[in-house]
Amino acid sequence: MTTAALQTVLTVPDRFRGPARSANGGWLAGTLAGVLNGGRSAVEVTLRAPTPLGTELKLEHLANSVSLYDGGKPLVEAIPVAEDVQAPPFVSFTEAARAESGFAGRRAHAFPECFACGFREPGDGLRIFPGPVEGSDNLVAAGWRVPFTVADEDGVPPAVVGAALDCVTGWAHFRPGQSALLGRLAVQFHRKVTAGGVYSVVARETGREGRKMFGQSAIYEVDGTLVAAANATWIAPR
Image 1 (cartoon, rainbow, N blue to C red):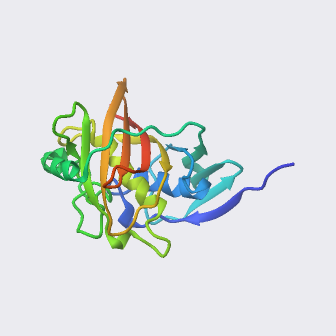
Image 2: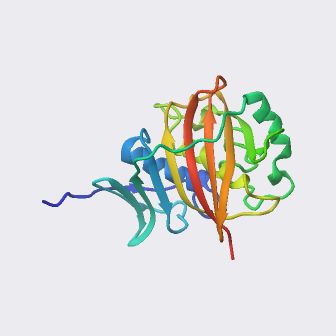
């Protein structure tokens, strides 16, 4: 017996861009994880090609996978994984907010209009600016003040949480002006993010292999409760 695929249309608004003409990878990862299982258990999302903005794309849910296509071209695929996503250690909101002063993107930013880490107007982007945590070897962190403008009638959607977990893993590696392409993001959501709430967003680099860079990120409540976590693979340009 063959299981029929459920197909819908997804159009990524320009607001949710990462690079100037394509979607933020974390936003896509959160979107597909939300479709697959709500992100309650770990979901691994692979980005195979840049996703265009303002274009009708085919979102296909088949058995235990969700895929996004531009015509017949595969863009993104999400599948469940058995293992929990590992998180970096907790950093207090005060320490995280203090770390923002060292954000490397302030000196040079490859994607200054990025929805997650770009210099967008307050309320338009997330404005998460991770910098080195004082006294740590490899942690970066930022304080996240969640704008009400990213919530819908059901609260802050998985797509926005995915975006918050995304770029911070890159900034655990990047120096001013550096960039890379997100190749894979495994995400897991433990609790809801509240519009108007304050959180610590923390990341650390976990290794390199050739052009691949690996990192972990997490969102924590002020009391140290883990809200969400992600493990990322970035691909550095040749």
